[in-house]
Length: 310
Image (tube, rainbow, N blue to C red):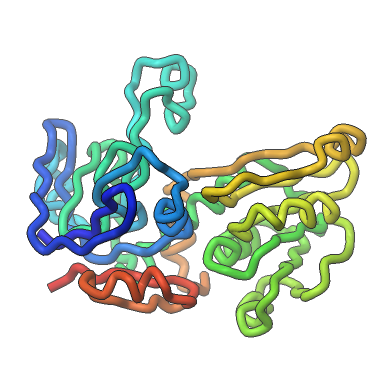
């Protein structure tokens, strides 16, 4: 099968990579579309130095085989964290933080930049009538919705989003659709910020004071500005993952009694509900052939996708 494989140093297109065989509890999914995420690009920069294999974790596809017969033939998306089921985290309702987990296309599990993938049937979600071009946004939208599980957003509370790229757009969409917070987006690119205007205030100048600040910039340099934006006793949510290290003034965090929360994967059910609502506006996908994966990786579009459909 066609696949984009990371060998520990670079990504390569492989025309005849072995097709995976599902375990007894897994689905075999024929991938239709896979989207490029900032995390994929950070893997190329050394974010997960132990990972080698098929990249990618945002996908939509068709189930060809499954331990649950009714899933066969359905169009689906899938969660990305495979847990052991018996460690402390799994037994206390925190399977996404399983001590022995593997993660699709990121850690010890071949991903979705390929014609086929396997996942436990328990992680598979049918998308119903949602078109593939929308359904493929489920995983990043779910990750954005995770913030609403971690932080309370009273009506009109001022919230800042730092970043004007793919991840920031998902966060902005998720909060706009599910809260009544007053959103402001800070970014560096006027042409990108214009796309946020239906959902949030926009600004090119870092100023103001916000009860909650969400770093979705993908850059460790943004954290200093994020702390400046956050009110004392406020909350800073960090969505960015990157290969480098970040430096912040922890004394300021202590003195101003800031709360810092990391935020990762989120709930698929409400994400699919939002995607089924045609009023949810999503950026148009920029489609690339798998053989042209480097163009997808280099793209400045809001979302680039690899098309594995015949």
